Image (cartoon, rainbow, N blue to C red):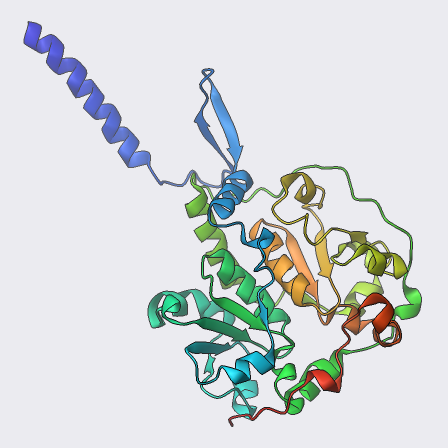
Length: 346
């Protein structure tokens, strides 16, 4: 009898452990929150966004590190061509064949996760440099890869436009414009009150699983909705939530109507600030060149915002003012001087 009293609790305990093991790592449909044990007795709900943010902070908080954004100049890339670097050209096949950097490999954006996991050993390279036509898509891709933990990934500033003038004619030189600079406003628009961040709905319970699911989704979605043009935005600025990701003096000197300034060094990874960005609107992020906004857009999209980066940044709508006020406001307008005459392989 005494032996039976011992065996029964042990069997009961084993059944509980087996049940917990089966549940571990399973998805719960499309739930956006997960429950953890509350010492006070009841379940405590933790949002997937919080778990994701904690995971990114644990991994080094890239967006608030000195390495953000991870840009590299074409001149440095050229100097290191004999070094242990890997160049990945994200352009379409035809553009790549018209001329690319020596030894650069042509990989499509959506294939990047598999390429990094199966085709190469990423950390055997000193640098992995992402290249595109103008630098914005490579900034977006480099940001995602950095957030995935690949700490040696960079985006080449200006893209292939900074490498060779022939490429600049196909990209940057066709994107600069002062067409909308007379439509700018100087009104300081207020940051909205905090609300809720997007409900990610991966159904996972750990930050690592949520992070992986979000990365897979973003790479599968591709790049069609990542960029937006100045023409689209100025046609009806009110239909977007526009984020100016620049210095205060540049914002006050003139910005897109309705744009709200968010501090570049105090927005990403700050829940109280990110929760002021409406989750139900298309978000347009812009900066002077589109590089920084490309990096920022990747982070916002990771957290479920329908964010776009403005192609060519301020260069696409107030170029003449940028040239005129270059010294006063430290603008960075793209000019022929930014484009090197480095060789292309065809």
